[in-house]
Image (cartoon, rainbow, N blue to C red; front, side, top):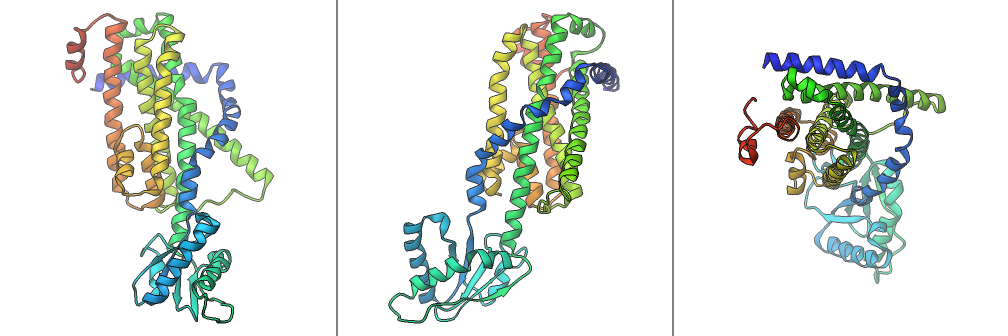
Length: 397
């Protein structure tokens, strides 16, 4: 193992210096300008998630008859006006209406509608009361039809924040984090493949393979490209922050993630590294099988599309925390970085991220070893067929 690490360091240092000090690196730093429009357009894919986030629910704490009348009125108005224009009411049995929206109690509700049809009362934040007081008064008017009562006016009680508004803010942070993660990963991971194919064409890779283990070559190349990607991201982030500060009074405010900004940013860097290494190790395996640029394009397209599908899976499950589809996205290696970053925005549990990073690192090593075996078989012409390939995946050659 120490010999493998030393050899990997030599390869990583060689590739890193060759890339950073090349003339093409400057043009690489200009790369995000072109896919920026694509990234913005791709935001429309989260439309369903945005609708889920914006689906406003209020706890209904009233007597049985009043509660039933309100729910019937809500159903009738939703059929006439549309689901998105009428707040969702969920009947809740409790003796303390204000505790329903207390932070940490329940993250579904933006406020509480309590009292009775004659004297209703709305508890919530100022923003939610301003937005939904009118529609809720319309609901109460519908529920009171036939009583001949005067127009209703809801009494209000303002709280600093509701757990529902906190959840919506954290979901927004989760979505932004996922979008940045997939954009950077897709933009940068393909360079691993082009570098390997170029050295295969020039026969350089075979010279290196005669001196150091193939596993060390693949590992070194991956981390050299990861270092180059980190430098690029640092430059882009500095330019973006400078442009925002020059154009406005400050950075746009995102709601604070559950785990806190320092830990969230650290986990964002870690999950980017894992997403990059996972996709890069797959591309190295493709490079081991491909001999021409056309073969590279043919073989890499399914991997790229598959990674987008896994991102969509993680993005779709962001509003379904703890459900089977979200658990699958968090466990499956290629969607795990995106799903776990969303969890960091919504939950303040640190140990699950340590487990996830270890799980993802394990799969990086498995894919590197598999790619090295493919390279030996297809380029160096060593190995014993399919059975020998599978049997030797976890043995050092």
